[in-house]
Image (cartoon, rainbow over all chains, first blue to last red):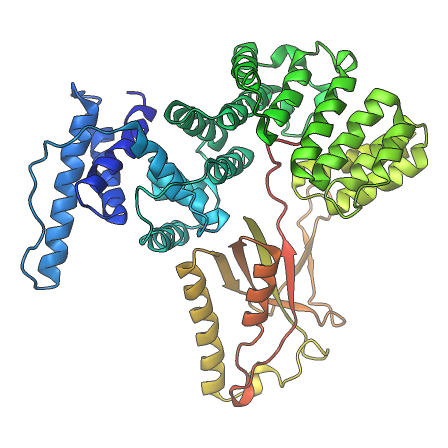
Length: 378
Length: 135
């Protein structure tokens, strides 16, 4: 059985339970329990109507839990036993669930955790493993997040931008545990794209597909990082690239540019080049200009300086770098790269070593240390 | 999210710790101190920020490779090494500011007379996995 199939039905089923009167937190718990049962029993006896099956089982779990709760409090049962033949899920339910789980009142970490559970249908254990924290900690993070949004109305209008930020965070986390968060982020973004027609949703999906396409080439067998310019481009996934480009072109045609479309456009230009040397750097710089106009981000400014260095030479790159805030992560690494291109190996070696001490992750630190060592050993 | 290590150094002779060493506290003061640590960890589990934490024995051993076919050399503790790691805690938080806030709170653990010991804690960010999108 495709493990993602029952999970893809989760948002809709939660929506049905909520519209039948269950509160979100209880509905979400009930659907998780139903999901566990589905994973156990569907391989042997697949239901003809998977959604109907999940609704029925989840509603029963919800009633059981509510009764148990009522008994525990020694109160009379007050919950109406509605027959489990109810409305079918609507596309809107899925979208509302994304909005709720990315609600602005949540911290990024809470929104990510809640989205992975209530929209993605992952178990708390899986999410904890993916983020390398104890299951008890993740369980608390999720239940706090549920409490935070408990007063939010399920049909409250939301902002797609907050949802996209959460999905981007999930994608960027990559894959550290046994859950492939990048693949899960793509699945959730596809699902969102099916629920709402929005060029930036398509832009983010395209961005993810284009980066995911390079995954096999991004790391050497020993786990070390392979920079874009040195990647074996024959290992890029051409099917993902052509899908990403297609999704992006359709989005761009609508003429409502946003930061994810611009980022995807840059990724598409890299994907389009048969070698690093054949990259259309002039166009890459133009897209960075667009991106800078949209975001004003110093990180974009930094990456733009790299592109300028490729398009107009290292001196121009260094000139572009001069206006970038030096405290931006990877600043020294970019400076080192441009100085080496400019022929100043001594300065480059010193800057690579400095960049290594400021690296935010071990793979990058090791890569930068090797660069410094390479220049120092000649 | 980012993970941080909070290192509790134990420097009996430095200005890291202003109060008397723990073995000169009253038993109740020691218990109150331990209880504070436990409560702090429990609170962080409840806020979804706790990863791990352990107390360490102050008596350690220094170990070094001594060549093929030979057992490792052991030595120490070196007399000049006053800096002993007494324990550590790993947290997973939304921001560096939050990590600083929590370290400050942990540093307020009670000592003699129930007063905060105000020990210096060292806060070190983890090097995690590289992000997917870099350009």
